[in-house]
Every structure is written in structure tokens, then in C-alpha cells.
Image (cartoon, rainbow, N blue to C red; front, top):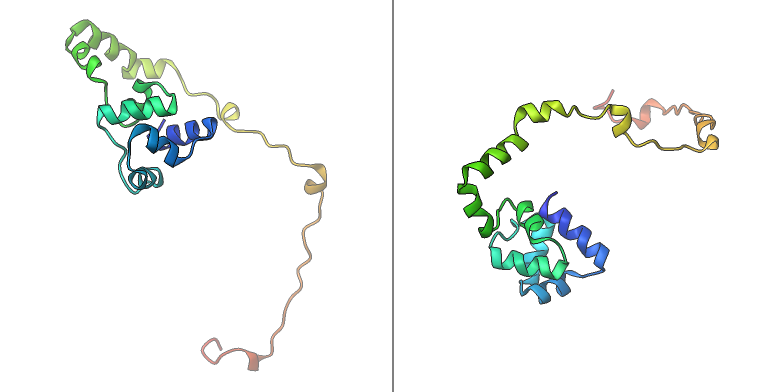
Length: 140
């Protein structure tokens, strides 16, 4: 999930305004508003993301991953061959192929259309005839 989408969902769920979040996380509201409009990149500084995660009551790792970062505490784990082998196994192309995508019928949302709308006749077309004098000479 993208950073902006995650933040907006949490703001809506918690009923928080940009100013409230920025005050709580000690972030410039103008900068943060530009981030949410897509005019600036999200912050990637871990202390800032920690404060934001606390202000939004969202998991720090989830917030950091949404901006393409790993927490410092995880970096040391990436040096371990067994951890990297497990991660590679989780995200290997072969594993992705073993979980085929859902059929299109399951992915599409079914919308119910009232019968009055389905049975309504198309609007009648009325031809409009303009005299040749009403048209500009460029069109003739």
C-alpha cells in the first residue's frame, strides 16, 4: 500500500486532520500537505516516520515499507544467510507462479442495476437542420 493511501485511510478512520497529525508528529503542515497531494516525496527519515506512526496509530514497519525503507533493527538481520534464504524463498518467481491469480469473475465487483434503469428506452433523437446561411463559410 502506498504511503499516501495508508496515511489517508488512517486519517479518515481516526478522524484526524493534517494539522493534528503534524502537531503530534512535529512535521511542517505545508510539507505534509504537499506529500499527500503527491507534490513532494514522503519523508524517509526513521525518527520522523516513528513519530508519524505513533500519531496515526499505525505499525512502524508498515509505514516504513510504504516509503521503501527497512527499519534499522532489521538491517542487521539481512546480513544473516538463513534470513535472506527464507526471504528469497518467500518472494521467488516460482512461488509467485504456484499461486495463480484469481479468475476475473472473482476480481470484478458485481453491481446491481435497478430494473427500471435497465428497461428504460433510449432517449429519442431529434435531427436539427440549420439553414446553410447559419454555417460559416469555412465549414461549407
